Image: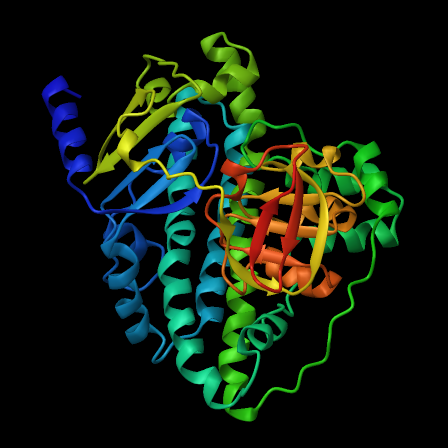
Amino acid sequence: MKKDYKKLLISHAKNTPWDYWVNRPYSPFIGSLNWKLVDAKYFEKVGLPRGFRLSDSLYQYPDLYVNSEFSSHGEKVLEKYFSNHSMKDISQIFKKIHVENMKKITRLTKAKISPRKKLEELDAICISYIPFIWILSPLEKYFNTLTQNQFPLYIKKDVEKFIGDVSIPTKKNAYVLMQEALTKSTDYEKIQKKFGWLRSRDGFTDFYTIKELKDIKKNIKKAKISKVIIPKELKKVVQELQELTFFRADRTDKLYEAYGKARPIFEEIARHIGVPFCDLAYYDAHSIIQNHPKKYDKIFTHIYYKGKYMMKNGIIFSELGHKKSAKIEGSIAYRGIVRGIAKIVIHPSEMSKVNKGDILISQMTFPSFIHAMQKAVAFVTDEGSITCHAAIVAREMKKPCIIGTKIATQVLKDGDLVEVDANKGVVSILN
């Protein structure tokens, strides 16, 4: 890419109205697989509704931004789509694609072709997951509007609690299935082979060890789910919310399962370019495909615009950074007041630092965080809506939880003594 085109990309990014979306510490390698080709035609190509407009994105480690028109326009697309479709349709499309992709990756690991060719084909496979990752933003906007308009008509008090209680999915995600396998069997090697990838949500972190699986088994507790009476007028919407809650976790689980399946290809590529496996994380995957491997720093910026992208070391737009504040406020997912030591957990590999009585602070929680959540007395997240994983688990475990603070992981640090007032939705530092 010519230098003047890079200047054009930077100029475009500077003048785009960005909305902060999520905080994710992606590596350059996984990032370059994740962000390529997310134009409208790729949503349509995988069977999602026509009309989504996402031709650009911006990532500045560790924050991901999206063009502000994407969610609002996407909500309108979904209004039309859901007039004769359902969330189940989206989940089934995704499941079918994933099943085919897993077969493709298995064949690819055994193929007698060059590592660069394998990576090129793997890149095309990864692209098919990305529209399902991005679509969550307009999906949440659509269903938030729907529930705000309909639920108060039939639920007269504590509407948010009702929404959260009825949003618990009936389908089982990968972590729940792993827990069930652990309770029924002692064949840890078989369980490790099937579910070990759940610990690695970045393509490079080690999988679960047998020792870790045994530790998880010792701490499995059956969730107590409250029975809720659902007005008949809301039953269809509730089914949609349950499917949305399942899809939220399932879409990333399947992507990371694909990365786990592709681990032998990643290892082969690392050997091919002569670097340790862990160092491969810092290379642009497309530069390897083009046979001029380029390494980047941990802190980097990625800009994507109309089929072109660039990476650059460091942060380009400092003005996009979040303004830190000592005041931490969010939405109430489950009420209660507790005090404890804050433990920041960004990745499943950090769960071991959470002790009984600690308060788990995270950008958002995943099914693989359950072990740490069982030990913690409360949860606080940067992201999430009333149907997010942290909110659902908080209600199951009956633990205070505040979601959507935006800044908790930036303001708090390990060892802080904090009070979580989930009656008011406020987190205070006490020391």
